[in-house]
Length: 528
Image 1 (cartoon, rainbow, N blue to C red):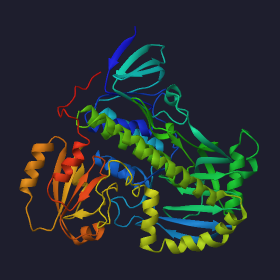
Image 2: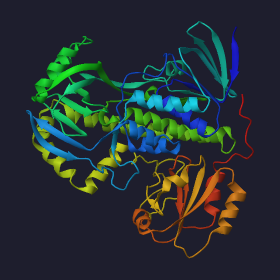
Image 3: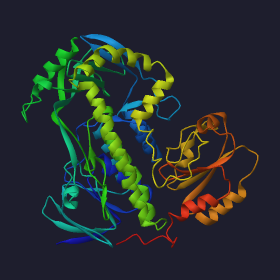
Image 4: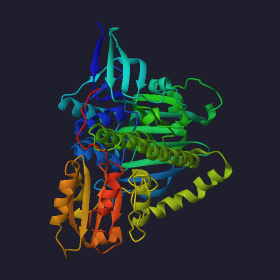
């Protein structure tokens, strides 16, 4: 018998992106249905690294410390040529004072999915496994999806919105008839998780760069457990030829030129790298996130983290529209902000991969003669390490050009559209004050005035969805923001700065919020 279910949001796909979106919607009290054609969460390691920005997002829902405990912090790196170490890289305290998680964490995709899935179950939600979407229709009032499970039973789900988090081959994207333009690298790459006898320093990755190939050896949690990533240029022109693991192992030994013995292969895959993205992240009431919207080279371990940030950006906007706090047009900013990020990401990862494996003579010369000295010197300086950390960890992503970023002030070092910088207040993480799923008005105070009247006025006008914090202008705060007078900062629910101003009344904040807020401030009924 065909059943009909009503909800607020349909989530297609229960990988890291879909599960992250579900976790965020729970945080905002939004109902959803999530399903996936798989039998359960993956048991393969797949994506490898979780960056600081993702851990900051996890920390808001109490998951970061578990991720760190179950992962492996990478402290150092060694570059190798012809079996010899050509450069030592120091990544200890990589992020300095920029994040409460100033490191790179090896925390594989299967562990991420398990962490997020168990959070869903703990909150009384479940994934409909072995379920696929047969059809999708939408109109001005909502979305309707017809699903079929492994037993051949069908059900109709009606919702206000749908989000396709269903991977690079995304059935959602095909049903929406959204293009996925880009290119495929002619090179063949491999990834393998192995148990390996290999003389190595603790918490250290090794990178060997050959003439037109490379291998990256990354420590994973567990004794003698390693991830191998590299390319096989000799097979680039052989189409879809299947590569055996023995060929990969021979290539690794050829490049490393050091004693190593692989005792067990836990997982192995070879693939061609695609660089593609959609032209638009939404169509009507349907959105795309993660690999469904963009795919790129694995350089820097950006893929899984970027999908999680897509979900984080979209969740609060959907929630605030459903609550009736803001106009529906706010949802257009999801495409505006995340499409711009995808464009930058594809370009950056392409360039990074060219440096690692490009076969042009000047790239080879750079790898052999310049990169080792440059990398070794750069990682000795805290300023250089912090610059690299912002780039890799995704804390440096900003939305300065977004329509949601207003009243740019040239006197501030920090701009509207930036992520709220990390610092300590009375020895505690500033983000601990910003956990509520709301906007946050933060006053940086010189201590000369109280702000009781401002707080009362804010509570009367926007108490349902803006909270209030006063933070002293500590020397570190003055250093970060570049100003030593009182000012106010309006933070979006994702802790990006919406506006920053030295005006200590609510006048400019009211102008900002009036452009976002629906005429009727009463919450909508969350049903279709």
